[in-house]
Length: 87
Image (cartoon, rainbow, N blue to C red):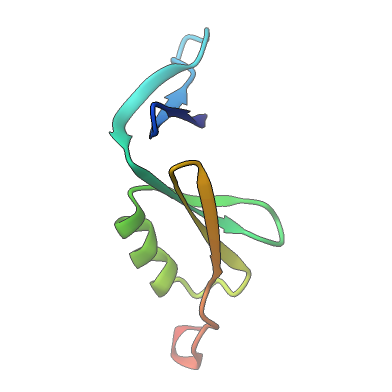
C-alpha cells in the first residue's frame, strides 16, 4: 500500500487480492495523516486527517507520532503522554 501525490491530491494505491500492479482505492484526499509507532515503525492509522487526529489524541501509546501531509509537505506531532487513568 502507498499514497501517491497526483495533481496536488493524495491517492491510496493497493495491490488487488489476486496480485498484480498497485491500483487506486478509496477516495482522493487533499490531505492525508499517518499515525506511526516511532519505536517499532508500525503504521497504526492512516487516511482522513480529522479521523486520525481523534485516534491520535485518544491513544495511550506514548511512542506514537502523527504526520499530516498537504501539498507535498509533511508535519509531525508526538502523542500526548498516557494519563494514569488510561493505563
